[in-house]
Length: 93
View 1 (cartoon, one colour):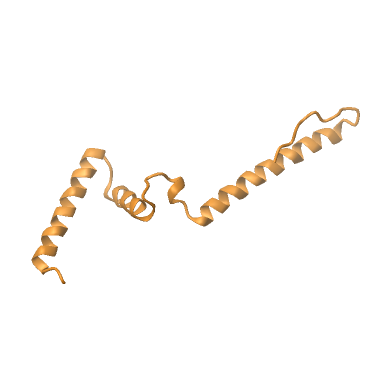
View 2 (cartoon, rainbow, N blue to C red):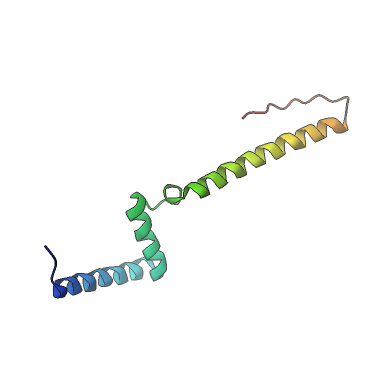
């Protein structure tokens, strides 16, 4: 059953008033509030981690892996400068 136009207009007006009230209470912009609503509708959470895309998650994983590899590379460089020293560092992956 379709809603009448007047009922839809009243519902829209109420939603706008609720949004404006939430913006004032939280001291935020309309775009921030819309983003929060979209995130909550998408994942049921306001946490950034719960709302990151697969590309963002992969980017984070690759960044961490790169940092680990750079640390290993630095350790090996230091060891190559001094042939009489041993590496006493435990490398955990």
